[in-house]
Image (cartoon, rainbow over all chains, first blue to last red; front, side, top):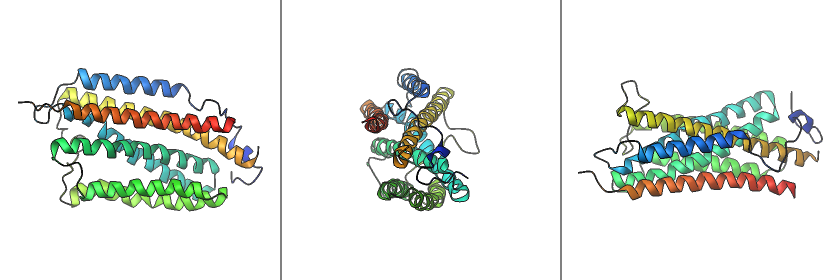
Length: 238
Length: 36
């Protein structure tokens, strides 16, 4: 067991250097993201019906998918592990993944309306997919606010882990909302049982964009986890 | 005829770059605060 009590932060390992929280992975992420942006802008064909605005496709769905399914999924999984094992590293991982996932979901919620304006003629619509995604954003924002409001590390970890687990049904609801409700948001055009509805060039760019976002997520979580470790050591006075 | 709406994806890409960049800077800034 790695439950952390005052003066017991040795269970978390040695404190990392607070001077520079990033490592080589952030360089790899920057290279991947910039490379994919160049490919998307200049070397991927323009979709004839939607025009150049369709290129938002290479940032909006990857950000939403990585933020919601990977970021919040890992947050919920790590929270479950914390409640089971009381391992503080799981709590810090949940915090890191939740915060990074929120940044990704913010990008999805900002770029989505820009795309929607060109395709639907409206920035926003209160349909099931968009509204429930906004609720998820507020739920995870509330999770981070809760963590900031509780000083006792054990209480903070336990309460926030329960809140993080509550995001799981909402994520499932968001995923299924385009099938259960009439919504302006389209159904998946890549992750579906039949063939993806894209040209090979577009599909390759999308796959690379997805991979680049995943690398960026991993790099940011690694940095954010180091920051959480430093804070844990500072709280314990070690 | 292909619609002329490149400004929308340019704004979206710029917004994404600003959000991700600002978030990375916020991690660095919070880590630097612990140094002080």
